[in-house]
Image (tube, rainbow, N blue to C red; front, side):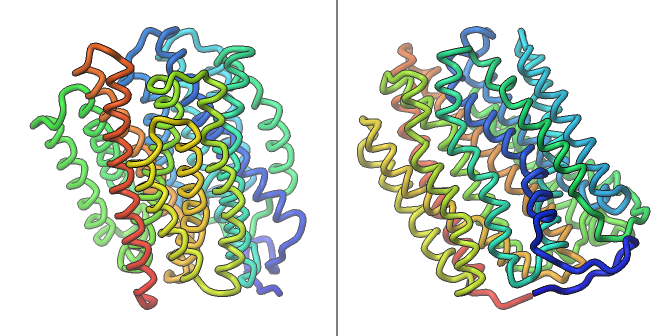
Length: 469
């Protein structure tokens, strides 16, 4: 039931005890709150645009900027973990997230709201990989799949709550209250994490690879900005240049990692084909999931004429399915292996996406039903793919692998939101009627998400066919 791991704290025995479970829940609470904010504000976007005086292309930065900062912060976690105790990292990340939350709930201008989201991203960028590293370093191996599912459940619970929470709070108190009401939960999580987190690995001074960080941060930034500019003028030379430059910088980051003495991320991580294809599947699924989280509430409000509360409730069944199927998928992986949950999840993800393109886009019920299928697929696919991909890496590479996986997952989500927004904004700019623009742009965006879902499914199935490398 347990195995040992020697650290400066003595000999630690892996155990699935209350302290470990509370540590996972506490560190995951920041990611939970951040995703609640993300999905609840999607419901409030039309109101925010009106109150803050910004357009569709601008307002989406409250999501894209958060995800961008998150994806850039996560790769730094292995360096931070080697230098500072988990308790200290958790405390700093929680205080940072709280500061960002207070900025958001008092925001009177768009720049203040954006700054708050950026600071939240810094806090979550430490807390999210910390949660997964607690699972990897402290949970017995025979329960690893189940607890990775539980960790994913914490994050998956947020989209199930966020839209309905956003609709109710928006109509009753206004969008500022969406951020304010989470402060008590953050406070409880802070106390629980500081008390229960324990150190199980040795601390050392791991040099910071500033050059590698600049490569990855600049690459991510150029890609997200390039996708965002699609909404302003389509695929122009400047947009193409931004996207190509971003990809070149990411390739250069990998090449630099192979040469650097102390790379930001170990280059051996990129040598595992099974791991990288699994990561590609997870990033694609995140693209689809967060794309739907932005598109469906806005499509139902603007194109179908529903209220904020109804638009939030449309995505609840699918989000609940994702939440419930994540631990089930982890348990299946522990007992039966990765093939069943990943293959079934990929099939449902694609089936739901295809049905949303062609059936019942004119009814709220149709969207809810087909999104339910996609949500089940997301729940079955994501967590087992991550566990399966990480299993191809040596123990010493798991922290780096987790950072790469989480970072690219957030980048995929950021690009997904930016892409969907760009498609909708382009349609709205070419139609005088905002409702018609949303209807036409939304239909195109559903097709784009179906294509990406198919690509993600293909990567997941390719990963299953690969031997350990």
